[in-house]
Image 1 (cartoon, rainbow, N blue to C red):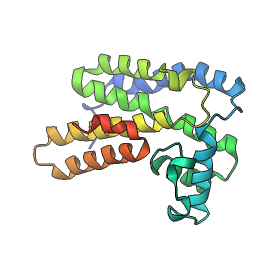
Image 2: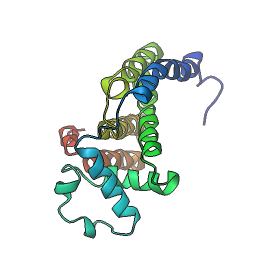
Image 3: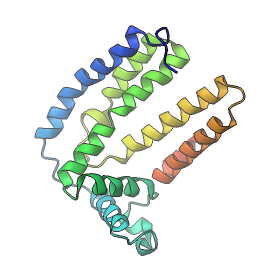
Image 4: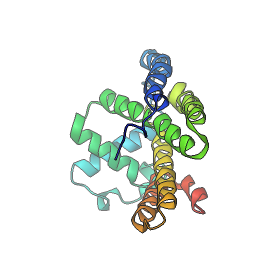
Length: 193
């Protein structure tokens, strides 16, 4: 429950900070010729489209051939976005780009819990200006989604540690970490968490 004393001015300042620092990168991305899709984006779009069309994971045999060797979470997310926004590629690209803006907010709350509100603001500013938020020309960036699951897993784990009796939160943290592994195989490096 949010109380008056638990929300400070810094908690409210993080939103305009992230919004302000995100405007130039988003404007740059909007005017950059990102229509050169790259290697993975068509595979993610195809996999998401197959999942939405009822093909399911069975029709996607040989996942590594069309999904860049990554797990099914990102194509499932794209499939959800297709159901929500339609099949317009530009809408899907912008939805994924805007989802990346959750990462600075999550980093703020994580750093705030670990080191205080000013450290949280610094973390939010740094994550906002990271390459995949600022200068990435990848139209569908799996790493931003991967970072979102990492940060959610860490926040949930810290909350579970703070509440000694919360095995449900610890389980949720593990599920979020598992989801990150099913997003991209590099998440195996975080298994010791």
